[in-house]
Image (cartoon, rainbow, N blue to C red):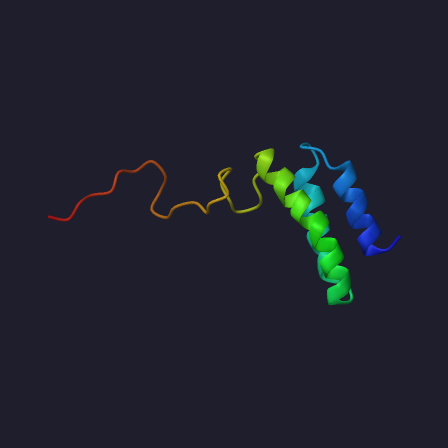
Amino acid sequence: MTPLDELKQLYYQASKATMTRDFARAIVLFKSLPDDEMRERAAVYMGGLAQMRSEWGVAGKGTRPTGRPAASGGAGRPRRSRA
């Protein structure tokens, strides 16, 4: 099975429960594609996986569910104003 075929299979079989693992594998497969033509064909499936990941609210490693990086300085702490 070629990397593109495996990427297609991930796209069609993805579920909310497997999305984190599937997306990580898709990135590895995308990076292994030999040329720009194959990457262009794969980009459709990568975009679809990214959209599903976003819609299902599956957070990636190092991000909050909103997709934004965590704020520094501790969450929930009020900022002090300088007078």
